[in-house]
Image (cartoon, rainbow, N blue to C red; front, side, top):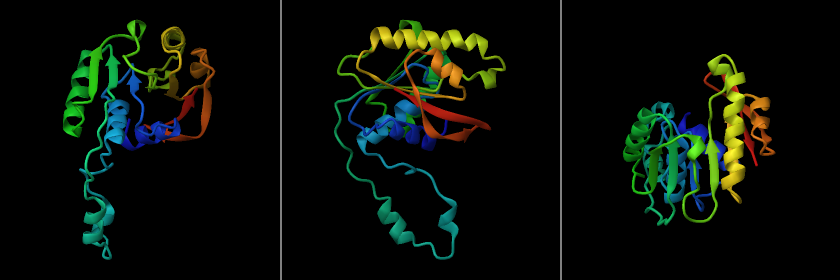
Amino acid sequence: MRETMAAMFLRQCGYDGTQTVLDPMCGSGTFVIEAAEIALGLLPGRARSFAFEHLPGFDRAAWDAMREPAPLRDTSLRFHGSDRDPGAIRMARENAERSGVSDVVQFEQQGIETLSPPEGPPGLIMINPPYGSRIGNKAPLLGLYRTMGNVIRAKFAGWRVGIVTTDKELAKATGLGLELVEPTVLHGGLRVGLWRA
């Protein structure tokens, strides 16, 4: 998932950098890293260039002033990601290092079945699980979504939840009472939506 889209979904869940975020299917760590960047006050797009910088009327001095980094905010929060794939965990750690947030994030290899809440007050669970349309058959995924819902209901009282998926049936299979946030958006050629509770 692109960083901009992850930041958008976090904002749609009301995330403002004042609570922890946990992603139990973190892949490359995008939700966890974006949440940490927001909490620390790191500017989005700080390390990239944009096509508009080549326009004739582009004001380099004004742009450089806008991009001047502010001092990092202090946070006692930690941001957590897990995935059953060790390669994903390795990639997430590398991405966190490159993003400058490795001191406040933690990634570990584990499946959703063994997930437990980290110490501290409840926060936000953000998940971009597999979609049936990518795999070709969503039937096996219904069990995965049910398991996600069961674990969250059993162990994460007080936590808010955001799940990104293409399919209403999968979202409803969690049993979490998720509601779709409109509008849906295109992602990798698929129309995905944020379902939140």
